[in-house]
Length: 189
Image (cartoon, rainbow, N blue to C red):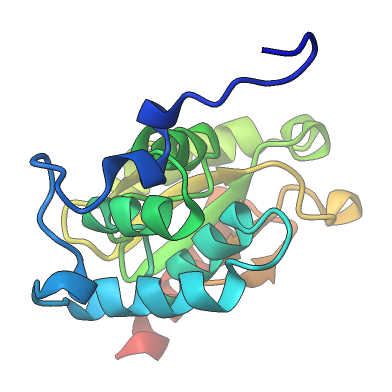
């Protein structure tokens, strides 16, 4: 090997596995049935694979379409990008934004940045945990809400703030939090 030249470990690449990997079923091109989630992933990978640095845009697109990144689609993403399953899984688990399980019907993202903390978001977070019956990165028992931390929504002058299903709310108090959740629940009916 030439000094300074990277060595490729073929055992960690998708190409080295071929189609005879005993650890996984064959992909759709070789006769396996294709689930709707797998079909969506294959379409998304095909649309992004030739772009530079496609993994993060693919993961965002999959989560936007499916609501999460199903564990059974990780291998298809890896194969489409000639990466190992471990490389894709590592990125998914590194970034807290990516979910591996479906979220609740409503996603509550509570700002945890310094400005919101200075204005009472810690008290609000404790209230949200009790109200929803779950911690951050989890869903309520009834599947209605998923509670996620977010670090700065850009509403610092109106702290504390949150997003509910992508809609921003600011100047929160526990009472206003409850009122907003009541409105969101009623609007969904």
